[in-house]
Length: 377
Image 1: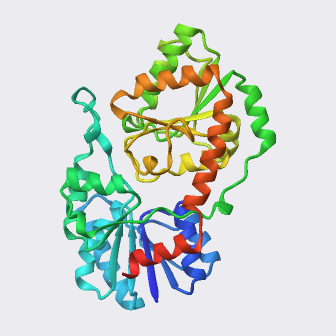
Image 2: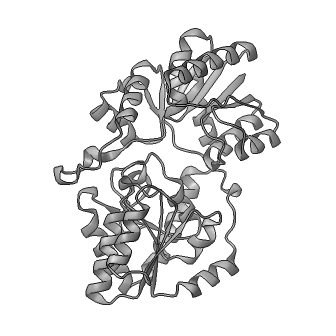
Image 3: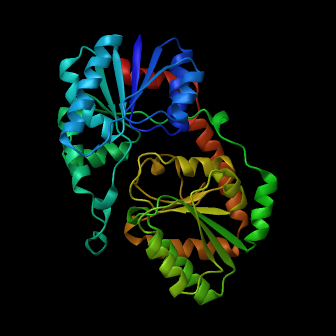
């Protein structure tokens, strides 16, 4: 069977690399087509014997751009006699749902996002969803014949808030070949622990946007440092439009010796190995990879209950922390205060979470067969 993996990015993603590798190993004739120029993802796939293609067009926000991409996808599927199109992420999904009317290929939409702003109380609802994203989701939901999502909460959110048809939404968890993940540089981890020496080292690893909840965590950390003179340091990874605002908060509250903005880092796992706890109160998730990556290091996280698939594998205060997104700042403060006094519980939780993640999301015959069923039937 000829299967096309349709994708808008050239970046390496372990979940997608794992899928491509396993399908190729199962004998599927795999193709990769992206709407951007070639990159490391193409190199990875080419090394597996997968046929790789790209169709990069400038001015990606114009109507003419989408028309050209739709026509290219139609011609590509016809020329290569593609039988199944596995379209991933909103950008390519929008293109695929229009192209499907002109090709014989079965088109399956894989959705990887949901913004949980509808969970918030009115006073927190200023974190609005982008109007263009809402329009794209509406069109995709209406025109897609089959939508695969990674968790029940994403499906329920789509049905409740986007009025999507539940009969065409199917759940398939992510797959990870955990052997693909880089191992931490233990020497570097020790050096980082020494450089940022503290009784408790916290990590935030998410794009610097409102929906990731940095402002709430910053306020909670500031409060416990000021009120309890706590020996805490927090490392903040990645970039984003909220960077300046967060940096100003650090200066205003004299937190330069407690909160460190490290930007985008290539060796995230070594930083994770140096930290005690990840705090990730994000409201825009489907199935977060960084939390799983942290779990592989035997470290646990604080996440929002009902967001993405966290509630499917987190057991509150047993293998991690589930917080109410409407009361995130207060609950984060309480958790930090608790673990600051009893850090030993973090190691116990981290070990349990690592076992849960490897069993639930690992590449097994059962999980791979479930993925194949998601597009064959």
